[in-house]
Length: 135
Image (cartoon, rainbow, N blue to C red; front, side):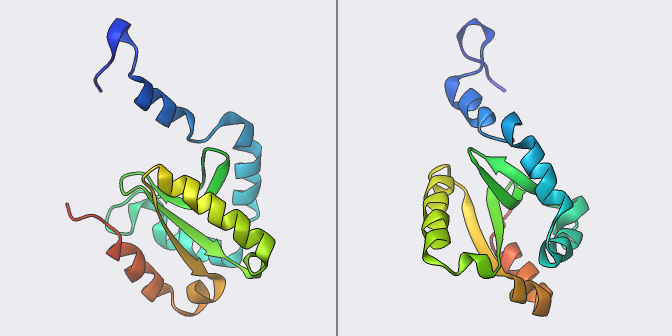
């Protein structure tokens, strides 16, 4: 990677790196991974080990102060799984602000419900593939 003056990375690269997986969220990310919902486990089984068109996904990856359920760095794609807890106005407002922030960093966010993953995993995977950039 190109470096700026004095052997330092340009600020944009440094700032971008500092927003991913901040140390203070590490225990919370680990707790979320260890207590994943059935839908999260099911989708992770299909995404892990670069199984979906060779794309690497990370689970419970933090960006800024937010933790994404799944994140594909090469595609800048965030996948969120929404359960019933997202069906109230307080959480919807939080989700809206979160989405604005994450999209401001050039990320694409797609959302699925627990029921979609439970009943139509293949359709969910096809929908994710649609978001992949042609290589």
